[in-house]
Length: 368
Image (cartoon, rainbow, N blue to C red; front, side, top):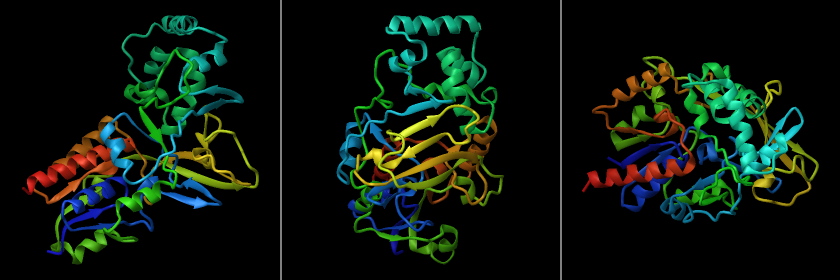
């Protein structure tokens, strides 16, 4: 046996697990099917700008230990996410807060805003919400829902809001203060040298093979690894033998513009249904870099198909049941399947790190 662990995927989960196991004296090999490390948080420097190639990633956490951990590998700049919504030319601050309510209704106090929303909710006569639309209306009233939620959500998920489960909308913050800080977390920011450099530091001294597909690689090398940590799709691991789990994907259309600034903000959401993209990212605003040009990315949501990136699990009853069927197959297998694709669950970055650290500690305890 040449390695204690084969780690499949050089994203955040794989990098953290590899770092912890290596520091504990275990021999690890990391393989990655892409031509780069860092998974979906990969950043590429263009014209002095760190471009988020797989969509914007803003680190945020309330966990002191996770914050201390990432600061071993990167220095963060304190960037605060304050997106703007564009509804047919009308612009609103996000998350929903007193700035939003004043822009929409001209109200000046929390009491006025609360009364406005309460009156709209009362007019709807909704009992227990049966779907996302009813849940959003019961939380937000009609104006906010129709201008800032409905179109964006239907584009993102490719389904009418009446067809979506209510739990999707429960993460949206609603505040009655003048506060555009979207995450409102104790710690937040972006690595000043980019996420790729952060993951490079995590993988320092660890053997990594890029452009290496697990299913091709494992055939002739299976007996050289004690255990496998797999961060890919769980249904793919089992050869899709019971069918394929469904995802939403995003097509990123990137443009370099020969101007200093395009939209004055890192993130602008387009919340009407007619605009085909959900948002435009202007990457230089994440770090405040000065340059004569700018790089923007349009994000077009789409149904996932073979060959596309699987971004968002569709956690409806059918797909969750299929996932559980695959998960049951893991019993007695010498493999750990983990992460967003492996567990068919959306994770924020801090939760990815927390999960990887927990798994590493569990593995180390088991070897004592």
